[in-house]
Structures are given as structure tokens and as C-alpha cells.
Amino acid sequence: MASSRLGEKARQLILDQDNEILMSAASWWELSLKRVLNTLDADLEKTRHTLEARGVATISVTVEHAEASARLPLMHRDPFDHMLVAQAIAENCRLLTRDRKLAPYGSAVLLV
Image 1 (cartoon, rainbow, N blue to C red):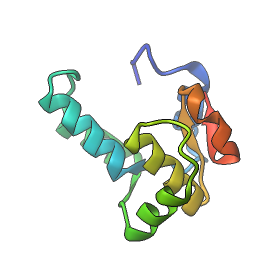
Image 2 (tube, rainbow, N blue to C red):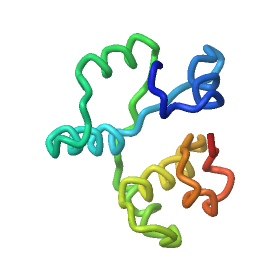
Image 3 (cartoon, rainbow, N blue to C red):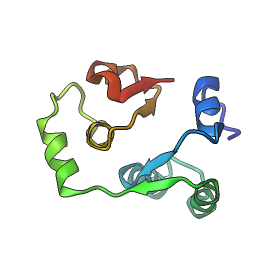
Image 4 (tube, rainbow, N blue to C red):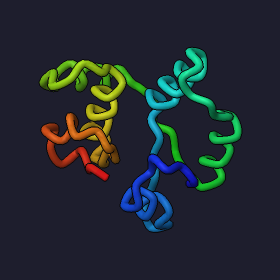
């Protein structure tokens, strides 16, 4: 948790053992693409093992998530973010993000 991009509020929520932390396969896909494009310098295998050790569960992308994504209003153009919002709504959890463009999606989004 040494990233300077991770705000203090997000860090506290993630480190709080009372909170269940979920990771979308869509996020991992995006990170993997960024590695291939050399826009991200991270050891994803090590990161995945760290997340698993912390008990972070993975949410797969399902057909239901894709359909929910298609029903959302198109307030931005990032398909990964659109999927994450749809998953947060479908799975009744909250998406932690710094992206203020996602705030109009309501209570499924928590700006940190």
C-alpha cells in the first residue's frame, strides 16, 4: 500500500480488516493491458499473491454484468469503468475510485 496515488481514505478502507475487499477481473484485465502497453510498471503476479494473502476475492465478469452495463447511462467512454460500476450495482457493493466522472452513478460509487 505504498502507492502515492492511493488516498488516505482509500488506504484506511482497504486496510480495515472488517471490510470485505473485492477485485474485479475487469480491473485485472485493464492492468494487464497497461503492462503490455508499457504504461504500467508493476509485478502483477506478486500483486495478485499479495491480494490473495489479504483475502481479496475476485469478481468475474458475467453475462449479467454485461447486460447491466448496457443498461447504465453512458456518462463516460471508459468501458472498464462502465463495467466496474455495473458490477458494483449488481453485487451490491461500492466502487472505490478517484474518478469524479463516475460520481453521477450514485451510491454504488464512493469517491476516495
